[in-house]
Length: 342
Ligand SMILES: *[C@@H]1O[C@H](CO)[C@@H](O)[C@H](O)[C@H]1NC(C)=O
Ligand SMILES: *[C@@H]1O[C@H](CO)[C@@H](O)[C@H](O)[C@H]1NC(C)=O
Ligand SMILES: *[C@@H]1O[C@H](CO)[C@@H](O)[C@H](O)[C@H]1NC(C)=O
Ligand SMILES: *[C@@H]1O[C@H](CO)[C@@H](O)[C@H](O)[C@H]1NC(C)=O
Image 1 (tube, rainbow, N blue to C red):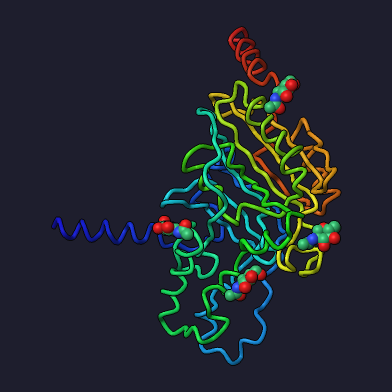
Image 2: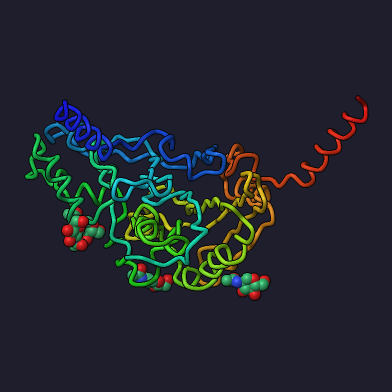
């Protein structure tokens, strides 16, 4: 009996770390306000077909991610725990946004550096945990042991990893013209939650000036000033991809789309999970980019919809995290009137 339950436990825990890139955020909706994920963003490019697979043995199995849907819904997992959510554009090899809850309590700290990759983007059957390059390559190697002979160049672990996501060499190839710009910043968290932001699926090429200066200041302001009085703060940070829809010289290393802008939206709630404060910001991804702040999420959404070609149905937060001014007192008034009427 004991051994049966033990086996079940072992099987369950194996099940827990294996996983697919699901077609939605069901496993990590808790990172969105009222558990309602961002909706209506249909701008991801579909994954380009890997050309010339004709001579390959078993391409469907050995290159299973090559036909996977884009975007990928990633529940960012580190040491078997969920930390935030990312919508990843496989063809552009950048996140479109990351959604998270700000660490409201302790003093945040930056932990570690960007070293992690997502084996689940290489083969949906592989581990859901993010992991460093050598471990990730080992996962792919183990997968390959079943009929994917590595004498085929396209089955080699490095080739598959390169194909499925942006890698370290892409960023170093720019020789400082672009930095690794976190969407979910390490500095809004501590310890493992901070370490969990260190994945290549949570960064996009960002101009070093705004990464170190304007955007950084905005992130600090969000953490230090705009959280005043909030019970929770839900944050979504995203990018506007540049216009080229196929890899070009404008892309990093001809492989990674360089966003034209970074955007941010926040929704802070009171102890009844009602909106207390909300707003957002937009910043061009250029050396002299200036942050424009918005007092409502609706204003930011309108700019993204009308000027940046986000779809008409794009919606970041449930009811745009609108502050319902005086709704409490008008409810009270109705109640009082009702009692008088009686
Ligand atoms: C990668 O991660 C494994 C396990 O977490 C660790 O043992 C190894 O030292 C790491 N390798 C590098 C290069 O950091
Ligand atoms: C992976 O991509 C990097 C960056 O382009 C490159 O330096 C490296 O040689 C590639 N490795 C393989 C095995 O394709
Ligand atoms: C960096 O940017 C400069 C100016 O636009 C350009 O001339 C140079 O080729 C770029 N370097 C790399 C490595 O992309
Ligand atoms: C917080 O707000 C004050 C007053 O507006 C401002 O001077 C300060 O720079 C802000 N702090 C951060 C970290 O941006």
